[in-house]
Image (cartoon, rainbow, N blue to C red):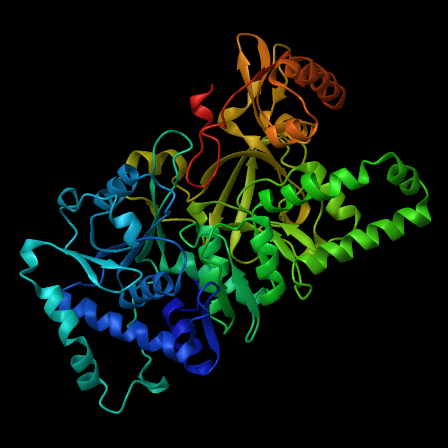
Length: 554
């Protein structure tokens, strides 16, 4: 267990950063200082009390990133309740199932999502609250109107409790065992069903402490939060770690289209940027690749002096587009395409790739950009996590990556079998990822254990590595490599926007894909060569976290 106490970190931060801005909504400009945030949390605690919510009770949270979302989350964990954040991308049936499965007694929800839910089929929910208006949307008959009365009495009750006003010295949070569950975060079901990951106060604290020790965030730093806070990655490093040190968080609160995002980055000028690979991959494919692929540009880049100047110009423009004042861009949530990674590294763009999973809340490994090794996922977190590979030689022969340490979950909620399948008796979490580990704990991931294909001559084929190359080919939007009989088949959803620009029709695509396959097979090992490309008319079905549901296409 860590020496630090998560809730004490927040009490110290709220008191010490009382006058500093904590949260701003990008769309409305509404801002809370750390003092305002602490006050809203105290009011919410009082509301919990008046409604009969007890420490250990589950509270579900469903909606887009906004100030009320953050207040609800922080109020729950500092009260000793268990927060259940649900991605707003879950369809209503799945969201309803998660609320029920988690045994949540209270629900904070976005109004438009509430309209899609059936309150009668949420039997455990005593009170449903609006994230937009703070009004009561639904109250269970067994409450006899207690929540409505609590809401009406809240102002007077708060003033009675704090007759001199709520000030910094009033910020005190109860002690709860570091091993107590603070959050149940449901995975998005890439293997067909969703599991509730139980994260303890210590698990969350491990991630926060790493952020503090690494100075990813610091007092007065700036963050633009555009990843979903219901996702473990965004939650830990766009909210939990920043709030522990006095960072000013701007909540983007809308779908991050490249145009809107670039505008917001230019205005906020964050000191650290968290993003998923898709953001950088889109910029590379749509904006950079067309420029550097021009014959004239290729000729200039063949001259070392000119190449250095071109790289410098591209890097500076990229840095400026991202706000110009950040220390580094941290890429996580999925593997970064190797071609994109190599190019960004070549131009010395300040980025790094981390590795994690919901079951570790999420971080397992990370290296600051100046020490980052291309192709890796950073070093195992020193002093917090340990890693090993189940192979005869972990530095050279890929095997399943296993991890243990402060960040590893308690288990899956109400699912002991699934827990036993991934957590062994010695506390090692079997990640399901295949890879190698070099000196100093640097992790290199090859692909998922379940997707690995064994070739006829006994070679291990990792479809993700082939897909990474294929996704960079002309007119390929996304792909999936599967085994059909004894053949390797690539399922491809075409890039219709690129097709329109090149005036290509569907009839022309088989011929185009034949050339794509030839080029792909030149780039892969002989045993990885694709026998056939099959075109798809529709995008692949994805989880709420935007991962392809591979099991549907095996």
